[in-house]
Length: 370
Image (tube, rainbow, N blue to C red; front, side, top):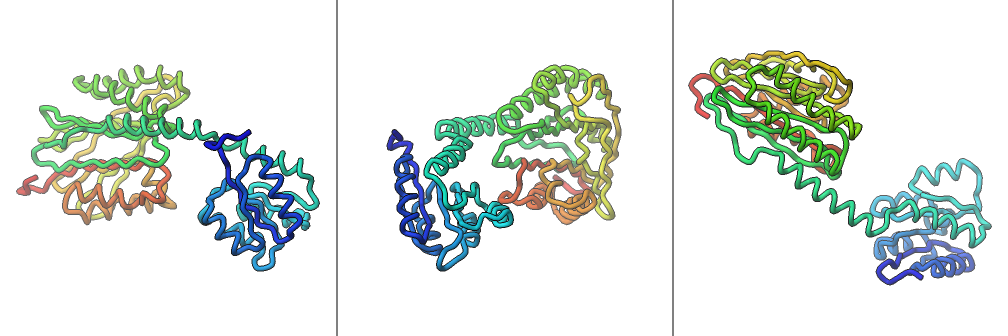
C-alpha cells in the first residue's frame, strides 16, 4: 500500500464514460488519487489545478485533438503522459511521442498492460528521497565552488581587475583565483569536467595545487609540477581540467601564461579586433606526459586580458561571433567591472546550461587612476 506521504496524483482525460471509469479504477488500485475530465480544455485546467504525477490522455476528444492537449500540458507540466487511442498506425504513435507523450497504448487495452506501462514509467523517476539527496549534494557542491573564489578584490597599481562567477542549475567545475605578488598578480582560470560534487572537488584540488606553485620563478616548471600533481587525481576520477594560468608583471605589462585546453582568453585593445590567445595543448589529464609551452602577451595602456568560460561560448553559433561579442562588451565598458557584467549578460541565467565565469584585467591608460 502507498503511504500518504508517497501519494501520487493522476488526471484521466477521456470522453468515453466507460473507459474513463475503467481508467479511474485501475489507477486508484495502484494508489493514485484520481480526478478526471471528459474533454481537452477541462482536462488542461484540471492538470493545472492538481499538478499530477500522471495524465492519461485520449487522442480523440470532443473539443481539442489529444496531440494539441499534450502540447498545452507540456508548457507547464512535467507529469508522465500516457496517450490512449484507437488509431494505432505508426505515424500517429510517433507524432504523439514527438508532442511530449511518454507512453502510447492502443485501444482496446488490458488493465494489466496499463499497470505495467505505468509502473515502468515511475521506475525511471527518482524517488523523493533520491531527489532530496541529489538536491543536498548540489547545495554542498555550490558551497564548495563558491569557496574557491577570491574573497577580496585585488588592487594592482595601474590596473583595473574584476571577476564574476554564476553557477548553473547543474553546478559544474568552473572557478577563478587570483592573488597579488610583489610584481603584479597571479591568475588561474579553470573548468573541471563534469557536474556536481565530483567536479567541485576536482576544482578544489586544482586550486590548492596551483596556489602551492605560485612562488616558483619559472612559470613553465611550476605549471609542469602542478599538472603532474593534479594528474593522479584526474586519472583516478577519469576526468580532466582546462586551465589558463598567468602571471602579470605590472610595471612592463608583460603577461606570461600557459593555456592547457582552455582557449577562451582574449587580448582586447581599445579599438580594432580582439585576438583570441591560442591554446598551448590539451586539457590537464587528457593525455599523460603532455608538456605545455609558456607564451607571452604585452598589455599596452588601455588593453585588456579577458578570460571567459565556455558557458558564454555556448550561446553563439561560431567562435567568431563569440569573439566579436566579447570584444564589443569590453571596448564599450568604462571599467573592468562593467565589462564583466556585460559579458555575463551575453549568457542569460534563464537559458544558460553551464557555469558562466568572466575575468577582466585591464591596464589603465596613462594618467588614469584606478
